[in-house]
Length: 233
Image 1 (tube, rainbow, N blue to C red):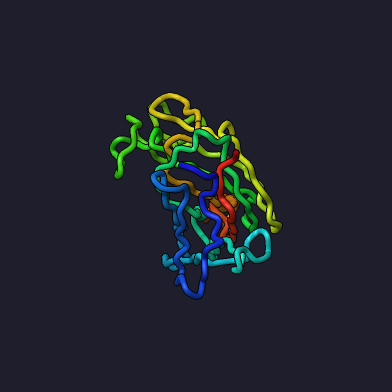
Image 2 (image 1 turned 90 degrees about the horizontal axis):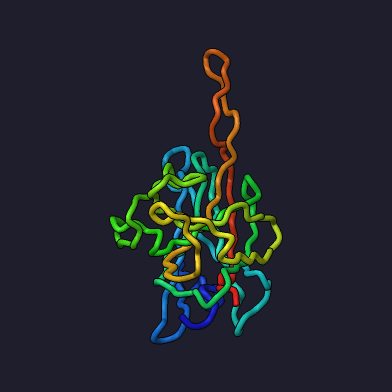
């Protein structure tokens, strides 16, 4: 790919685009595409409990005659594990860059998020579409440390989030992953997705008939705003 910018939302017009946040990165013939999606554990009634919205971006001003936009994931009364803001994208070779950067602000229970980068090397060969990792992946297998033979996308944990726009720069060495039994050193090659993860806090939520504490996730609203995702030069 050419050019470090992945998606900056500056070409977005919420009146005309009808919720389409999709963008492109690079130039022909390395032109790629990227767009957001969201997921959560769900509302107490089992229904959807989140929205994706345009918000004023980190500059707070105008860009090329239009507003500087960012994207917001707002989650209402999450009761399960938390939520995530993901970006599907064409496979990008960012090995010429040093890492990935973005701007972030919001309110999340732990005051921090994690970022996962999907790569072909850590995606199982059995996945659809398939990767090149000859193993399996699941939350149970990808603990710390990951189970031998597991395919675990590289992630960076404990990224601070406050209510003030903050620039985060993550060198590739900040990410840890596993590729079929071996630790995976992220180089920026073959990245085909990224996900910002928000988790609920866990604590005592009730007591059983015998008075013993029952532990689980503490329900909460979540709000995450992201702008100017780019590779580090």
